[in-house]
Amino acid sequence: MAEHLRELFINYYETAAVILFGIGFTTLLMHRNLLKKIIGFNFMDSGIYLYLAAKGYIAGRLAPIVAEGRTDPKLYVNPIPTGLVLTGIVVSVSVTAFLLALTCRLYDRFHTLDIDEITRLARKEQV
Image (cartoon, rainbow, N blue to C red; front, side, top):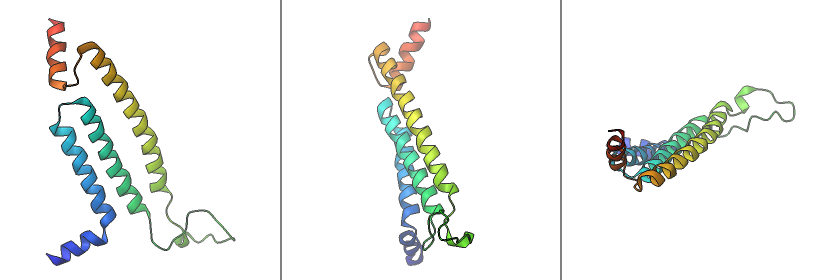
């Protein structure tokens, strides 16, 4: 048991990422309020970005900027996880903006943020 705890503390970035993802996933599943679901979605995104950044970093290596003519790849950190994180953040901000705009439209139409109530009212309108 002590061995597992030591590994959790050694990999604290990954542990924090899993906890963030778990909080977001639980929030997404357990709450009916659309704003809380959006917040849970953003927690999940943050956990994924933290995990990717933690896995992409290698202690003792430099940023991938060739300086002083040193081109040995063993000196530098892999830039691909960082690029994925930056791209993911841009996509996440766009999706969050869309979800918030959609939530505003749904609230204007149905005067509630409860997803079950919105579904009930929408089905009632169709009949």
